[in-house]
Image (tube, rainbow, N blue to C red; front, side):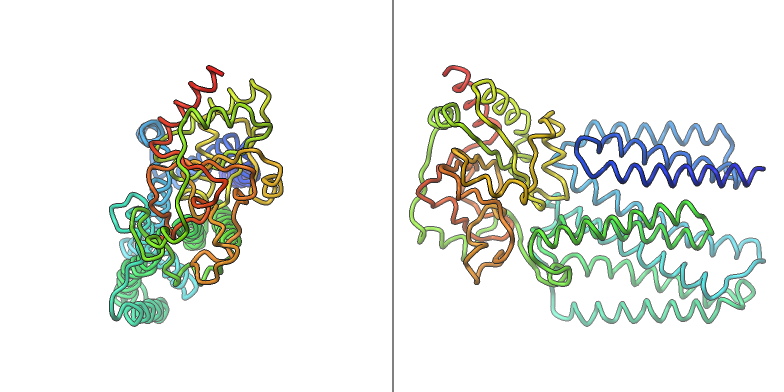
Length: 474
């Protein structure tokens, strides 16, 4: 009876995971989907603890209160600008949790002095440790790059690739040693224990070496990929523990992460291999030869909040294009207020969201949802690109590489071939930026120098607030 209840709980959890994931497809249902998935995980954890009799009900309640309290505090205190690195950190914690659980299985068998560790189990433990530990260190390198504690530039050093290859060989050697020692474990423990230590130790360094050569512009892809890794590590741990719900949840996270990674790569027109070894992008504020060549494109047209307000108020159709600069300035609420004021004047207002805008998948959608921008006004690139030709004013708020026309024709550009939002096709474009610094690709943006483009320099939040004031006065 007890096992039947546990199995039923796992089935309910799996169903909640699937429906939760399904509802994450749309911003309108994403919050509910997240709640369903969280409920599914709660049911799965509670069922597992009861089945194994690991904790008393009082201890479980204490864990819920402490964990829920930490989560609530982080949810309230972490700014939207810090969300990408928080997601990266969560991926890392998920990875190290899988590694520790896999290691605990070895320690458990060793402690009781009986049981068996077959070759298949040894391989799954090694996989869990490998993927989990790579996810842990790789995620915190991504965390450092996203939070600018580590340079966003690709980092490499002489001998890095041979060292990476040597670490891969060490992982294979450690796994082989574990498999060979599995039949005699725990009577003869050294081969399995030492092999596990070698795998985990090599994976620690491997995670660092796999992520530091990747430039800041590719961090959204890296975050999605590491999220997939954390799921695969959990699934491998599920096989180690013979835990069905862990296998299901890990497989769902792993598969969805890989699908999202592919979507991001398609959005940049690059292969995953190119992302992993391409060294694309760097510090957003860094100058480069290409960026310095902006003067050869001509001069830019500066504008004022007063002039922008007039252009927007008398337009028929306006498209806002958000970017990471909007997140830095925390301008999303001001942008929503401006959109509301324009709609009161009869202006058709829409938002165009590029798949890789920001520093994590869906970053701009999250920001706009936080500001209560209506979901029916958010459009993906493929849905809205054809509308720029009939748009009076396109307003770019902190976006850069995703609106650079060089991606269409400049074969020497690092972003050549990347699908972009056709902002330059609008009758007039207005770009809000603090300065002329390039984006993560480190190249000058041709859009800034177009004759039909206006640059509104300054903090985006303050600039938009001034525009709102002027629009209200018209």
